[in-house]
Length: 456
Image (spheres, one colour):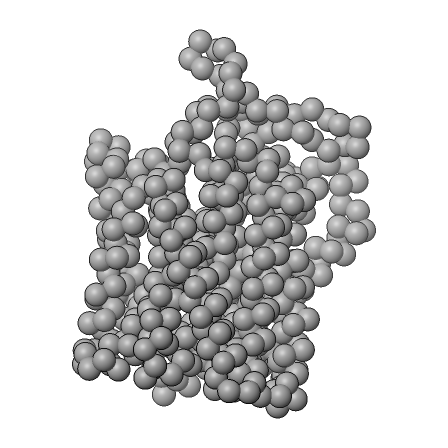
């Protein structure tokens, strides 16, 4: 997987416990064949992994929660958002389980990321499905690249819209395109770093800026006169708006692509998915934050709530200008984290097929990173509406990655075990697939209709 994560060779064995679960016993083997304690260079701690996961899950989607609640209704969004969160976490656990089992069955394997997990699960699955392993890997890689590419482009749009408002208010009359060009260098520098460990300080600072921007924005919302009555807002909405809600909500839980890379980069990967581990704790806090932000934002600004709630702040106020800049900076510094996932997909095949990349791996990876940053920048220049593209990417790509693929992995993994597919597993997985397909069809259709309407 390139030079992004440097991990010493690990031999993975399992022992069955009395209740049928598997406990992972990790041993490292040096050149002489001696076993020693696992040594991971550049490995991240639990706190660092939680920091990355939080930052990967609360980017532009956090500030889009007002628009999300507008499309879902106060009561509808409050009910549906935790359900979507539980479904996301459950599917992420199925993905982790499939990855761990695939590693167990692959001699010499240390870890698999999302695409490799899908490939190996199908490769070890029922015979009719084995020939689909390569195709499934390519499908997942395509969705991941499109999703992460879209996230990165939207991050450019987010900071540009907020920064442009502030500059205009202070008499700096420059175009949106020029403002976006100013943001290119801050996005470029951390994105050229080839190791996740080195991005930790950027991610930590981004979280501080993000939380400050959110707290300050909500403080302004509470202090800007009496809050409108809840009865003045829609409690439930129609089907077309609910489809946009679904897309925005899935976009906001954009961290599934980071699940396996973050777990694999930890010093103690087993702590990632324990009951009170990194995954559950971070997602619980994230969901609570989403619900509070969305509820307050929609009650305050109603149908006028923007795709980013920072755009609803009064631009003439100096403090509001500071909040816009800091919040935009907090979201924008998540760019390297999302970019990291895309590069882990694009770089390995390029390195294998290009002799120059094999001879000069660092230099060529930096060149590729530079080129991809410029591509996301170019796409961001033509994005007309932030909130509509958030819904489109969430409905189409994020839904497949978050729900559909993990369910398929679970079906394939359980089919390898006699009576592994019980009635509960069938019912649960089919329900998740039904919800996912409904969201894909309705959300994608409605988002495209709204985008076409905006272009006209």
